[in-house]
Image 1 (cartoon, rainbow, N blue to C red):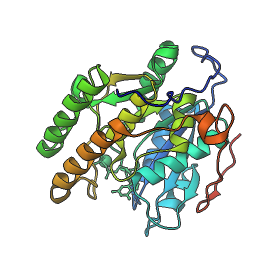
Image 2 (image 1 turned 90 degrees about the vertical axis):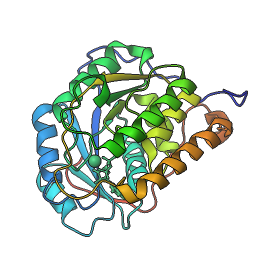
Image 3 (image 1 turned 120 degrees about the vertical axis):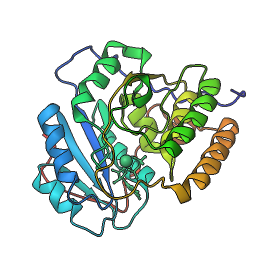
Length: 281
Ligand SMILES: Nc1nc2c(ncn2[C@@H]2O[C@H](COP(=O)(O)OP(=O)(O)O)[C@@H](O)[C@H]2O)c(=O)[nH]1
Ligand SMILES: [Mg+2]
């Protein structure tokens, strides 16, 4: 990495392994996922009842929000579509404001298996300081479904680039199935990449000296609807993200002290979102 400002590394209390009091949030980005998002919420509550579930409805024009709420999720609604990155950043802001220790992403299209949430959590906890984010990787074992060839090629390209930059093996940089600790929550609440955020988010973590681990997971094929990275858009996706990675290498990143004049993060209230659903206990 080029010389730059000090990395963002707020001091947080060490995470106590297997601490039952950890506050954990599953963030479910959803854009027109009616028919699937309710099932995702119920599956999370069944397999990981210790997680609160926050669905970020990203300006859907269908009944995703009502379905999520009926299934027992807290629902945050964007008044218009912002893209996956915007949806996730709202989730991280919520996690920060409500003092969660752990935040996971579980996509609203049903691709991620909530049964793996505790595999991710075990790595995040037992590794303590060693893993600020744990990514579920389809390519460290059996992916569980036939990953489309376009996605494989894109994934491999980003995997090579990030493995070189981060000097550690990153096998599934486009996986959105990931979990982060308080350090990651604070960083991503303040700044999260837009458009196709997963790959850039790994670079961000690396630039801020936060640590990444991968655990093998199986995923499902998308039930219905279309991935945001369909074939016509995949070339744009490749060029855009590669450019963003290159620019990101040289980007100056403000430290919390520079940004706020004090240690830690002063959160700006989210302007365009309203919450509903059951309160966080
Ligand atoms: N396509 C799309 N998905 C969004 C958006 N905002 C939130 N999402 C959610 O982000 C998740 C991942 O999106 P998806 O298109 O499946 O990405 P992929 O799994 O990487 O191919 C899904 O749960 C979507 O519902 C958006 O603006 N567009
Ligand atoms: Mg998907």
